[in-house]
Image (cartoon, rainbow, N blue to C red):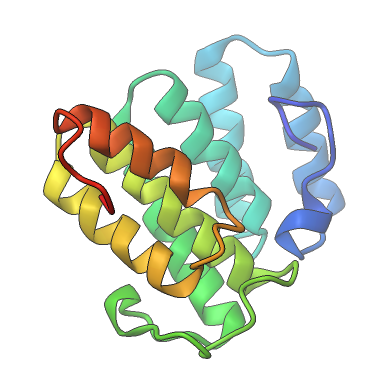
Length: 166
């Protein structure tokens, strides 16, 4: 379950949400922020293979401007997705053709999370990091299937519009 839309995110992320995690996420859906945080991290700890939990964590923390926690969750999710997709643990070494990033599953989640790291870096004032993440997203997804162009536009605006490729 996606706390932010009420929809299931299993299909997009390509992994099943175990019933125990689904119960935690359902509890989190109507809880106050401190309880949401505890329930999400509990869900992540109880089923680290469940990619949807990482998405919920980094989205929750980024929405609260808790960028260090958002980045922590995103990096953990990136690592888990890389493991599941058979990608290099070092995101900078993942090259086009390493996986089919257009298909629903761990590789697509990995790419989506790399884009999230660009956003988190940009919002936390680390423009150079954001540009590095974004350049890699654009290398692996030149058609913009995961929405990297939105982050590119934000990065260009943050740097005064001088970055065409961000």
